[in-house]
Each structure stands twice: as C-alpha cells, then as structure tokens.
Image (cartoon, rainbow, N blue to C red; front, side, top):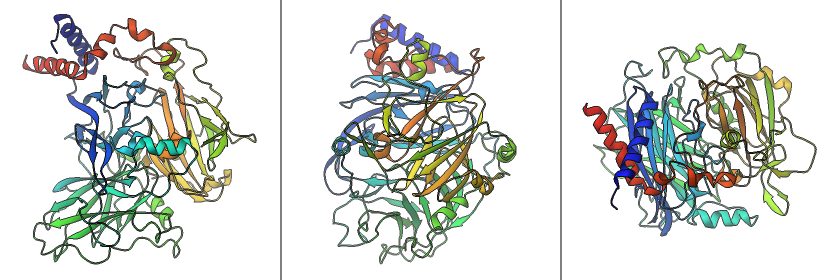
Length: 587
C-alpha cells in the first residue's frame, strides 16, 4: 500500500511526540503480530494464538530505564489487548492492557503501547487479556535487566533459560469460554506444556508417540539462570529438575534470599528465577517436570509436562520414573511453608543502588483494610458467576480514567464493599475508591474449593502472611514485618487467607483480579481507582495521543486526529517510528 505524504507526515509527527515524551533514556522497539496458527502441542491439531508466528511468543528483553515501544497488530477475528502483569507503569495506567484502562484493538487494526520500564528488574511475561484468549496462547516472556552500574546479587550466570509452563486443553479458547457461559466446569486439562510443547515420552501408556517435546541444552560445570513462568489457566504446578537443586534467586522483580529447593510450587500467573548448577555426571539426560498440584494424582497423572535437560557430554536418553512430587497427605502444609520461606534479599540492590529492604513497611501505619472474600461460583441472574464480596464484576464499556476525563457518568460505581456483606451476590461494575498514598492491607480470604492466585496491576505488594482458616484481627500477630517478599501475584490456598500490604503511590485505575482464568472470566475482579486530589500533571500522565475510544465515547474516534493513524495499518506506523529513530540517532 502506498504511503501518502500526508500520512507519512502524520505518522512522523506522532513518532516525534512519542519520542520527545520519553526523554533521554534509550528507546527499544518491538512489533507483535497476533494471529492464529495451527499447532499440535499434545499431538492433536488445533488453533493456537501465535505472536509473530511463534508459539509461545518472542522474548521482550529490555533494561530498566528503557523506553519501550510495542506495536501490536491484531490479526485475530475478535478484539485484543496485550497486558504486561508485574511490569509497573509509573503514572501511566493507559498502557496496562486491560478493559478498565484501554479500549480494545479491533480486528485487523493495530495499536502502539509506549511506556518506560522504570525502577524495575526481573522476570515477567505478557499475554492477551480479553475473551479467555490466554487459553489458546498469545503469551511470551518479558525480561527486565539490571543497569550495568547495579550489580546482581550472585555470580553472573553462564546462560539464561526461559521455561513457560502451563496447563493446556486441546479445545481452543472459544470452546472453553462457551462451556463457562453455559455454567459448565472446564474439567481436567489435557496436559501441561513446556515452552509450547508436550511431554517427553517418559511413559508409553500415558504419553502417545510422536509428540514434540522441549530439550534444554547445557554444558557440564556451568550455572544457568532459569526463569519459569506459569501462564496456565487454573492449575498450580510443581516444578523440579531430576537430581538438580533449584537455588531461588528472584521472583517478579525482587531478589530473594538464597534458598535451595529440590522442587517448587509455581501457581498460575507467577514467575520465578532459579540458579541451577550443572553438577551431575551426565550418565544420561535428566527430566524437567511440571506436574499438577492439589489434585487427585492418580486421575491427573497425564496432566504432567516433561522436558529434557541435555548435557553436552550426556551418554544417553533419560529413562525410568519421574522424580517424585510432594506428598501432601504426609505433610499438608509443605506448600504453604515453602511459600513462607520466600523472603526478600534485604542486602541486595534492585533497580536502584540501595538495599531493597530499606523500605520499612512493618513500621508504617495501615490506613485502610479490605477483606476480600471469594466463594465457589454461584448462579446470579440465571448465570453461573464468580464474585468477590458478593459482587461479580461486569466488564467496563469504557476505561475508567477515560470516562473521568470526559465527564462520563454512570461508567462505574465507587461503592465496592471493604468487607463481605450479608446479602445475595449481584452483578455490578463496582470498584474500590482507594486513597492516594494510603498504605492499605488487603486480606484475600479463599472460601472457594480450589487453589487461587491473585494479581494486582501497577504495583508490587508485600506478602506479609498466610495461614489456613479465616482471617481475624488477631492474625496480624503472625505477619512478617521485616523481610516479606514483594510481588504482584500471590497464591491463596483453599480454605485459607493471604494478606498483602500496598503503598498506593501509583495513580490510575489498577486491576485486582484472579489469575485463575476461569474465575477471572466469570467476574472475580475489581479495580483500585487512585486519584491524586492535588494532581498537577506530575503524578498521572494524560491520555496518550493515540488513545482508542469505545463504548459511549466511540464517536470521538471519528474526530480524533489520530484516527487515520490507527486505521492505516501497523506496519506503516511502526515503520515511521523506526525511521525517526534512525534519523534521530544519525544526527
């Protein structure tokens, strides 16, 4: 398609504005084309969502302080948004990629995310946030590196390995969400994938022949940083490498105290970094295992992901049984005690040259407490729905801060209850009216029958306590007030509570949701609306120049100076950004 002088000028103008707003930090460009491909990860051909024809998608690799420009092209047949959980967009919720912050990218169009990855390091992943799409793919790893002047708190590894694990169904996301819409349970997954591939044939009965599996090649005597992400739908997974120790080093942007594990539970939405030394004799290859947790193991035996760790001097293939999973009947609280053992490395620097433990959260007065209780899904208005404090969230028609800026009334309610209420559950678009610079306590009370994982966008939160039973004010006596890990996704065991503490210094509307995709789809989410009453442009950015409009504000898209740019096509837009980038740096 020919590019007119007017169109090119418009794109170049937008590129200039985008570039100037970033300041002097380096700018990194990516283009993500989201489309369907056919793949057979479990031996059955099916439709999956690929990024740039890859499943999983490509690595986004940036350094803290970088400005990131990601042009997303929607080649699906339905609306799309890409979200970046755990990547904190300071003052810039407009780029968060969920319906409360962004209007969707409609089919065959594109949208360009622009944000600075400021004051963060660590291991994250991205994924599509709408319409249950993550169940079909669309995810990929996101690595935030230390600046050179900030040392990492361990010897430089000899290599960096990414493992994306998750439960998987041979039905695509549209079929799965149809089951949920009908009030049906998804049932047992068909397997667990590792880097988009099925299990190695460790058992000829459980694993059919011909399935492609992942092989990780390593050299003896070297130490590798292995970043593991659970991108699945709802299954907690136990991760282990046969005969190798896992030295925990980092989780979701914070360095941890160094503890060795032989196996580790990774819940839906969570990311961890381990240092693994290749210290075995390589008499054969070794199993890498991701198996389902908190289930009937005899029934779920086939829901196991198996990859191969291959030494360059290996003398044969892996053989024999898989390394044993944890035994919950023998030690019921093993997983919870393991979670409690994940502590902050208070002597290490993070993204800035000061110890991570210098924020003395344990001595700050709590300004508000929110007790958020969730029960098994229930029928509301004839539909099976999930809820928090009896409110099943209704998807927004327009992003909340966009509604505020255009004085659009009725887009949401600021009446989310801070405690469970004694009333029947209801469907509503109710969000939390949180106080800017408040220090809040969020109690996640899981009275559902399944293991849950929760995520808060825009923030990391101190995980100060968890225990079985119902939370009470006396539970505060159990809190870790010194070196609790800070993270964005936290597990909440069935019949138990987890408490996080959050300092609300990031203005915007931020999504608080179940990571379990079925519960999230059925309404188990809300938002924290955080507004600085003395806002003068320093604590919250204005809507970006390329903002999309939807719902009641959709007519504004026709008169927007950016509307032609949105409809021109992603390749031209991205090309203009790249041309300006090259011109600027050649001066």
